[in-house]
Image 1: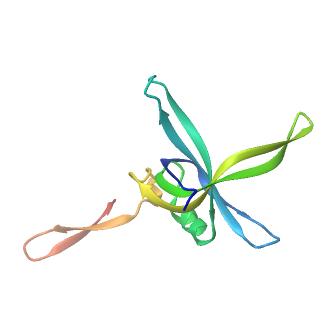
Image 2: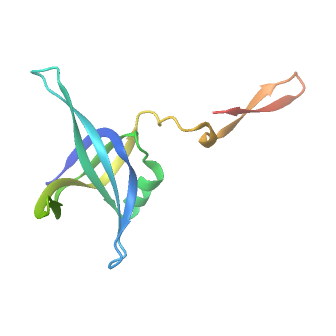
Image 3: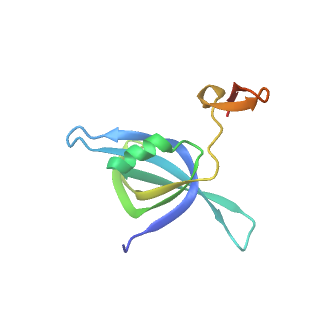
Length: 138
């Protein structure tokens, strides 16, 4: 593959899907924040990338990727061109977009609400003859 980009960053916007009525296709979109460090200064910048995931890969993104999650992504760099109205004037805008080909969840899962935490059964010995089953939040 001649056009390949690989990045590790944090999801800045929860993935959302956009459907196209004319074709029935669906794309899942999210943004990725990547830290940029400079060796000449101690300044740190955040670079933002728009990511598009199509088809089954988009469904997997919707089911597993959440805002704040660290992910490693791989894809093709593409240009998206559209018209935007600025002060009543339509202006053509071109911006880079990553067409996702694969992703890997990294780091720890962001902390969820207690209500969404799974309940894990923990077995604690009561005595030599029997066991007591105690529910514990995981």
